[in-house]
Image (tube, rainbow, N blue to C red; front, side):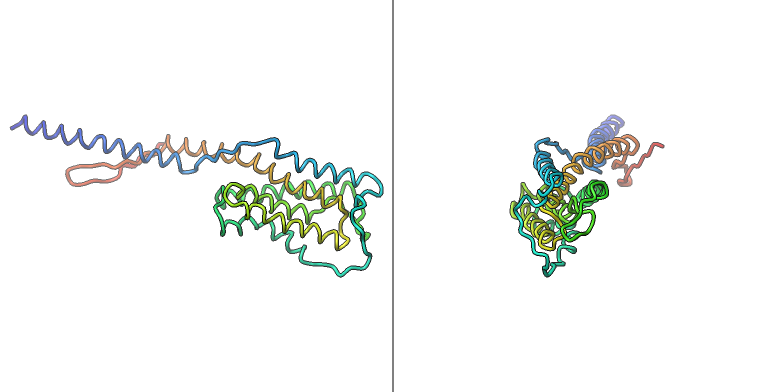
Length: 253
């Protein structure tokens, strides 16, 4: 009788132990994925286009009489287009509009952080140059180089390109059409030279590339630290006894 009793106990423990261990393993695995690591590989070739645009704009500004590269015939009296003032900032949210229509590469939290970081870099670069170069605008106003409106518009367009180039080419390139309209409006309104908008486009694209380059290493370092901390200090596992089951929770301070 006693032998049968001990054999029964042994079989129960043998059956429940793997389940408990498996539950703990699954819980640890879920904890490790609490903040997933998002891999991002930087490609230096992505800097060629913005660097080229900025260089062309800077050369045009530096050479007297070359601000427009003799490509644009200006009229002193034009009926100004005001929509560019709204599209400048609206384009910063273009990637979120695209999220509603396609499959983005990263979640909206990462996108928001990327846009914020890119805009901070963009504003710093363009504002610094405006107050350093002090180029006169075609309409006589100050601080022409580079175009901040164009920079913001291309920032939003390039963000959408980065997020949708692999899933939806239409959405990926759609923002550039709007950004080009903003750039053309700045020329038409006599608020900027051609060199200004060319450089502005470069700075907008560059700020996005730099944001991706700096954000993901920092984000992933934080993610790995949090996941390691959670997996090491917290254990949650199912438990079983003769009255039923429950959850075992352990936290090490």
